Length: 289
Image 1 (cartoon, rainbow, N blue to C red):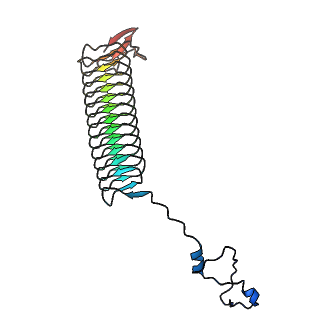
Image 2 (cartoon, helix red, strand yellow; image 1 turned 90 degrees about the horizontal axis):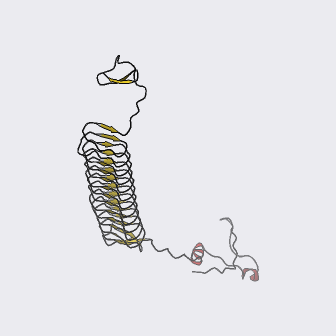
């Protein structure tokens, strides 16, 4: 092996040109022939970069980024972050810090101190969120919990979706403890009736089966199939299939619509062709067919 001095110069010739030195002894003393191997041996090989990933403790198929935590579940993966733990089989943590994915096929996308502790549970991000039952999902936010089978919390803070297939889209301190119950947003709302919905507002409670509150504050829909459109301090009481539009109204009979004020536009002025029960104006006096 010859190391080529850094001061040497190179020129090339065609393959049919002889390379024998034919100059004077003085000229030839400054010439030297080198091979390609000499060039390879002269150029230093850069040191290989250390691998960013290493085998986890869950077997040959588990992988963790160096310094990201512990991938102890079979075929588990930690892609980045710090102090994360993927102990569930086929579990994944993409990044963040102090996250735990201990359920089978559980996933934590990132964030801080999130827990996906059940099979197929997912926490996409945020902090201090928990999905601790099968197929529960928390999208993000802070301090949210999806504790019902297939329950979902989209975001917000301090939300609790405890009912099976219950959903809380966002907001603050909302609760959906009943099966298939939904809270769209707002704060301190409760959907405790099966298949009930609170779209938003503040301190509204829907405890009736298949009942609905559109918004407002301090409304209570406690009877089944009842609706409070909005307003405040309304209550359907025990009367089913009631509708309330206004404020400060308490239902006193079922199957009825309650309003604070009613303004009817374009009232027919003749009963001709109207079905039974229709309202029409007879010279400014309301009549019922």
